[in-house]
Length: 179
Image (cartoon, rainbow, N blue to C red; front, top):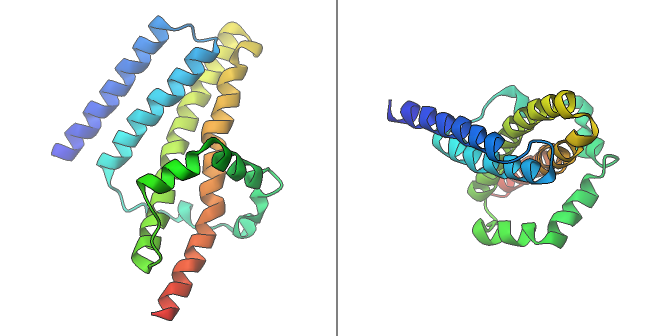
């Protein structure tokens, strides 16, 4: 009951915050696109941390067409990974959650990829809705910031999780054989 109430409060807070954002910042500019994405990141993080789902859906399983993540390489996922290292995200991420070399840590890392992917999917869908609304109301050019930031801040992180997950699963399988 407490968990459900907390999830409802997070949702209400998110909707209220978005309404305030729409009221105080013009929807057709870069500042709105940045603010919307980071507000949603904060709220979705709170939501997924509270949810604490096991994320066992078959959606998270590697699909045949993904070819162990190789499908993402022509889309520039390796460049995106280098970009994350270059801007310091990788160092910040490893400092807050260092990766140990054991099966339990790898299992936790696998879970974190699923949780991160879920968060980015939620944000991607919400921002896409705003993107379509802004495109119709203000024109396609005015909605480009929403589209660009949605691709960089949500779509590519989803690709990255799906690219990394097969590698983590292989490492887990190898670590189980060693033990």
